Amino acid sequence: LLLRPGERLTEPEDGPARIEPASVEIATAWRRGQTVFNDTPLGVAVAELNRYGGPRVVIEDPRLAALPISGVYATDAGDFAEAAATLHGLRVEREGQELHIRR
Image (cartoon, rainbow, N blue to C red; front, side, top):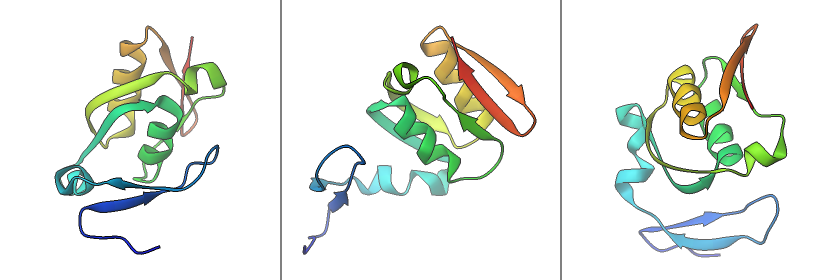
């Protein structure tokens, strides 16, 4: 595949690869300590956040992992976990170096 400027390739685990438009602001948000999600499944957002280090965020319930999340969030795992939990009426429990998002 050949990508043009302003495009990105996404390859979800549960579907085919696709070429999508990419926002430079969103793609470089990590440089400002931010992540941007737009109707993204919470499990996908957590996987993205876990790339930045710090405590690992864990979602064991697939129903919770499917919940949508949108917005601009700090790349700090604790802040993100608390914000995501609050958004969906969930709770965060610390277990060692992991933050578990649960009902």
